[in-house]
Amino acid sequence: MVSESLSDDDRLIGVCRALAHPVRLAIVRYVQRHPRCIANQIQLHLPAQLARAQSTLSQHLKVLCSSGVLLAESEGPATCYTLNQTQLDWLCQQIGTLRD
Image (cartoon, rainbow, N blue to C red; front, side, top):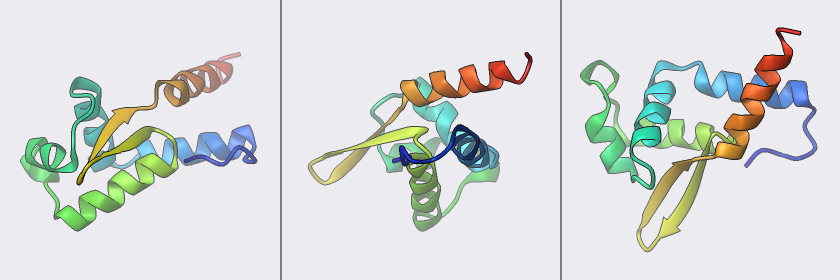
């Protein structure tokens, strides 16, 4: 999860970097439409040109969770992923300040 000790600028950079990769953006879009999905579901529904090995997908999910974009919750042997709406609301607010 995102460290509370990060400055807003460092936090914004981390979130933007996490979202800047095409596979990670596709993952976020899939999770948005399918909350509480698991990694296998995500992998099966990524566009063919973005399909990756399970280990690569796991790394992308780790980046998204570390940046606070996704939340991961263990349910037995599976991990369910959801969007962290609080983080996304914060991101939208931060981007809004760039217009001021």
